[in-house]
Image 1 (cartoon, rainbow, N blue to C red):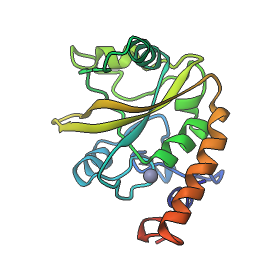
Image 2 (cartoon, protein in one colour; image 1 turned 30 degrees about the horizontal axis):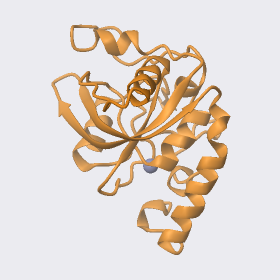
Image 3 (tube, rainbow, N blue to C red; image 1 turned 120 degrees about the vertical axis):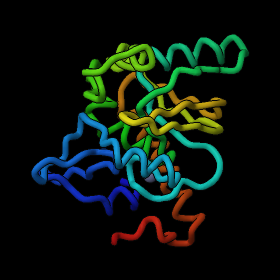
Image 4 (cartoon, rainbow, N blue to C red; image 1 turned 90 degrees about the vertical axis):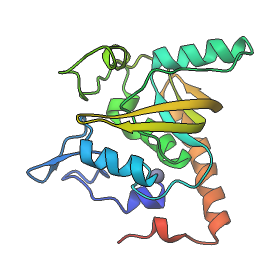
Length: 199
Ligand SMILES: [Zn+2]
């Protein structure tokens, strides 16, 4: 577990609760995305999993089967992947997204369905809702940049320039990559930067 995730509040079973997860009566609603928390992450460039700063440079996200296949096809064809469709899913650190891909049932479980905003599909979000059923295959994807928009009811993200594509058939495939990333991060900071300390 990344140290910054280790420092997150836990639910009653001991699972770390992502930054963008809403709480109701002291119970995290893992299937949902909290509007205010998501907006705060977007405005302050905070990781949607661990709520600490994402350094300048690439950001990561877990994508489902449909987007994973689309990225694979364009990369195989030697074309740049360009998806202008906004998504409700916020970015995070590489380690956090590798971790989330393995443990978050809404990201990792085949055919798990995200609960976000499905009740208000419109032209902007219909494709997001359709794409929200994850298949056997997904990916952890690094993007060179992202844009966001905070509307009255939603926080939308758009991701540009695929810089890393790590597809998976099962979520635990990313364990070696996560271990390597955590070792690299520990070496880089000579311990931990402020972001990883419990507070
Ligand atoms: Zn993080």
